[in-house]
Image: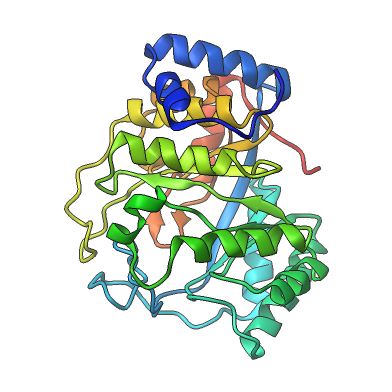
Length: 317
């Protein structure tokens, strides 16, 4: 199978809506062609600066526009970040992701501290991923020089639905940041969230946009909304596990070489549902008891699941 960058909404809709077992089977064949089916990359995510974000993302507890009760935390000290990275590595993680509740990176002392964190965690032999909001071309270059391997900046949803979820930035701002990341030589981590109140067509359009990038994003996180009390979407109903399976399988078919990460919402999924996602092409997870501010399965629980399913943590590349 050759990689494609010209998927249409109509084509991917047919794929997404095909009979579930046929969809999973097709995705599994493609997955086995490009990846080791018994290996799953384990990433750990740490919020290095929590709360106080000026963006109005409807789903996020860290936005100042939402009324979620969270503990606002200024930028963590270097040693605490290194300690957390060390703990994550001992737990089997090969990638350490650092997230900061900023609208955009600013050229100040906090950015210098993040660069220092990146250098320190890289020296542990771990891949460093950052998600810090929008970055300029020059800032992206400095992150790359500090050893940052990947940069996460999710599209969240389709361009048409985006303004229903966020009004403080444009979809084009998201795309521009991803272009700056690519120019700097970092790998791209970009996916989306389902359960925001969007239509199936919005999910498909988001995947079509991601699959149009040349090259495809190296990592594609598939998130299910975790409704947080106090946010605008706090009363949304959780999405079905079948919806997650379909999204994982469709992402795998559209972007065969990408790591497809089963991300937020995994806490609410049974082991059986997660197993279907792994079969359908998911080969990366976040492990650890928290994803920024929302619950996530503990390392020990994931290792039990891996043993049952015959999976093993992928080694760092």
